[in-house]
Length: 189
Image 1: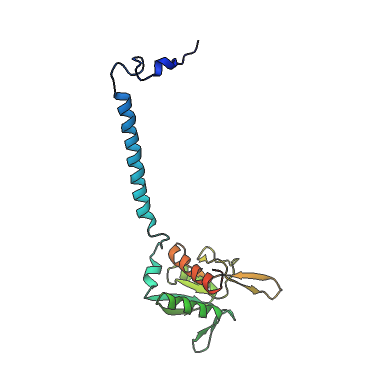
Image 2: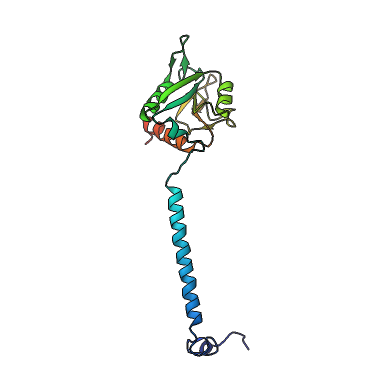
């Protein structure tokens, strides 16, 4: 014999399941459904509010530099980045950074130096972007986040490497904005 109730025992008029005239199971199911719908609506409101400002910068860099000052570290690496004896900054990457700064209405404060010093300055939060022919296999991945590659360079041994720019880790809005600018400039999008 089966321990499952018969079909007759599960009909709405069956006193074995509901009791005569007892509406509680129906009301319980309705209240449960109302709670689920309310929870889903609340979840939708919360996630819509949270997603409105994504991506975000942990330090608010994009907001600070837009209409302000973009602090850029530059390590000499011709033809990507050059620094003249008079402090004049030039090169392909420097020109890209100037165009990017113009697109967000920012002035540039250049900080020339060797890669290791710039990596330390980036780690200390003193720089927003670092350029100088950095490649995706740079040893400074712990000190800065790299954009996706936007061009390639040929090394002296004939191999090629993908060129990137460095951004402060956690500054996701700046990273996305800079990458979109690079993608538009290089014709990727």
